[in-house]
Length: 288
Ligand SMILES: Nc1ncnc2c1ncn2[C@@H]1O[C@H](COP(=O)(O)OP(=O)(O)OP(=O)(O)O)[C@@H](O)[C@H]1O
Ligand SMILES: [Mg+2]
Image 1 (cartoon, rainbow, N blue to C red):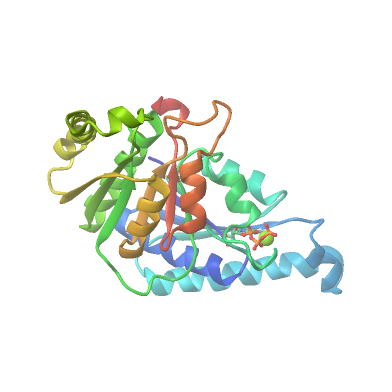
Image 2: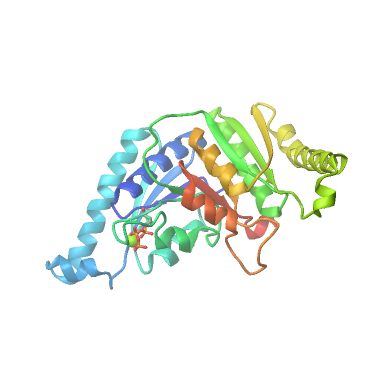
């Protein structure tokens, strides 16, 4: 634990929602908040600014940071807030910030990009790549549900996701909805018609999910847990669950997929389809 939450902002509406979320998270966890704007000297804003290269866009950055700090203060008056204007490539700079942060928070989209996309290049470049949890925020929360959803499949990454989710739920006094979505193994049509076999698959999956959850229930006895063990595609189950949640937590990799993929298909799918902020969590080198 570094005692610091870092949020990246470019002044856009989703980034402002990220600042609000990060300020509240810092207040809940007792962490300090660091707000970072990354100035890319080659960015087109420089060309458009017309007020002389460097000045034009660092001035924009300073204004963005001042407004973000004010917004954070309004949301969480008691937290410690610092701001930093960094220079370089946004993804690289925020990635290195994540090494000294309990979590890195960003908006789903920014000021640029193609309007139809659910996720900008910064989220794509950071989720599964940054050192610790990356929280992607789309819009300000309208309703508080008092629920955190965590998806788990028994993989190492999903265990770190459960740990992150239980800790957040404890800090906020939220309920935790633990989702274990599994899919029917490829059985022959003859076997599928044989219901005792189906029943045993159901029973085994339920047993596995309960066994995986047990250590966290024991470590966080105050967190009310709702088990959701379902036979369906995890992206569908998790994005549906996100409608009634304040945060959804997934591991950056699961059990399946390609060995080289840094972000698994479930994390990818949830980032694109969730209706609430998404935390993508991976083990830090010292947690492995
Ligand atoms: N210059 C920056 N400094 C700090 N954080 C940034 C910066 N640019 C983007 N971010 C963070 O990343 C989030 C997503 O922005 P991103 O740039 O990925 O989306 P976009 O601008 O819509 O698309 P594009 O990928 O075309 O830039 C922002 O909400 C913000 O949190
Ligand atoms: Mg951008």
